[in-house]
Image 1 (cartoon, rainbow, N blue to C red):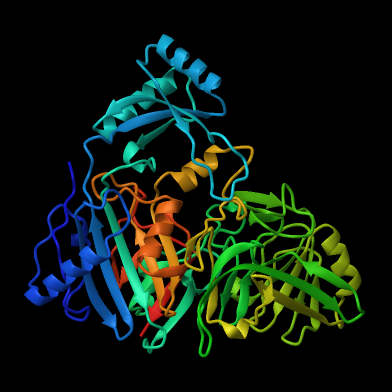
Image 2: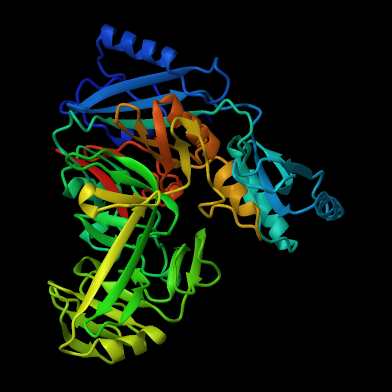
Length: 535
């Protein structure tokens, strides 16, 4: 059954509460002025989103949240009768492999499989030819029927099966799409636009609605990529750079695009950000600091230095390793450091070594920090960081290769890939690690298929755009791929834009209310950080 949303225009955020009633099949009409309704229709006609055919129906409603801040909800298109549920059996490299698998499926009694040739590659992929071949079976209007086929395939020994909706393939469809837009004029907005950590510490996660409510936020949007499970590091650790209150909270995935929030006298920016930290002992010895506020040896997203394996290039959703690391822990990490073999030293505010520990895992002082070492880094601390010595930890941040002072920004949020650069669509998915050479299916699933997305952009006049696209919800919203995301941002006036964390993490709040539709079956996903607009 198709979900429908009646057009609603909210007079003011102070008088109307945006509730979960937005997401049921029928929404009561609120009183609106005819003039406001006409203005909304004209706006929709002039600035239709570049999704599907131009003739698709689109409705927009806009409300002012504060001087310099507007919230717009856009509904476009309708569910296509040509889209259906099917089972992806395997993604293979060659047509011969796909043909062989199809014959096996037929001989096992699973009807007439289909072979889809996946031709689109990342914009900066130098390889030519098809990305791969996708073998599928089944055509169903109901997801439950496709899941039943998936179960029968599994019972016959097939693995890696996925039930998918073809409206999310990235091919032509009528939608629908639900897009939420917050636009901020930093010159007019008198409040604050700040990054916020879940529970105000690195460890652990929190829902966006929780963060928005305890900070009394006007609005909010989820932030960057982060560690989900302990096998990949410290849960809640940002998988990329995080700068809050002028301090480095998490090191960069070097070379990946990030959002630089504006501070007094400086503009917002989107740049390729890298970080480098070093520890300088009072005896003259210098040692690289591999990471900040995270579990030693596990580098989520890669892009580090110091001999990481498998790579020191960005590699999304992959955890690189290093058995010899020096990690700095500050009070924002939590009460105690990560435990394990190795040594650590406690530094006071001046960098004086006040304690040496023969094992990792101890209290972090409220004023000062801890340096934790494994492997060769533990040996370095033992030799150059004894009690009474002094260690200065220095950080260097670059944005597009140029030094960036942390005093020049209200914060930095990690993201990637870049979508727009100087007004042109420029998606550097390969350079930023969203294509795995050994597994082309990764890019297909992440970049070419439609998913829920969270995007950030900057207009020519300096205004910031925060955009969410609901997805994985047939009949409500099919999501967007990288190219569609770029086109959306450009149509909204963006000249520079990037992708933030999406999928089940995609979330936007207005007041205390979630205006996006969670794609996780469990509901709103706890996340690691967010961007909040505070009054």
